[in-house]
Amino acid sequence: MGIVNMDELLNFHQSTETIGTAGQPTREQFKKIAEQGYSSVVNLAMHDSDNAIPEEGNIVSSLGMSYFHMPVPFDRPTAEHLKKFIRIMYALEGEKVFVHCALNARVSAFMYKYLTLCKSVGEAESTSPLLRQWLPQMDEAWKSIIRLSADEVG
Image (tube, rainbow, N blue to C red):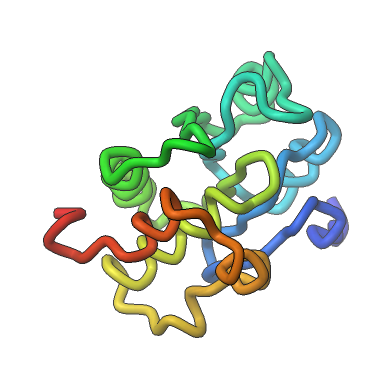
């Protein structure tokens, strides 16, 4: 199997010991993800996102991983999207999970909220490099996601 360089993945970030995040992987990179022991893939990108792979679910499943596609419109994220994401992450707790979207922006924001609200991880440790770069120019729709409280998320 050998060591695979996960840094080849677009905007890869190891969020926790068991959760890796990135932008859209290629077909070949999904094989590398499986080789690294990930058992599930969560995709937050839209069906028509840049570089989307229409048969991604089939590819992931053929590699022995579970696949969850939860499209989040980049221009209209909602608290309901975040709540659904958190439910998926709780269902996959204890597994090695790979989460992606088109660039790792949606995922970085959702992972930040999941880690800070649900896992009591500090802000600094929950902020991916991409989120750190994005925060100053983030639009109001995403700022409202970042500001959600534990009560609002449930």
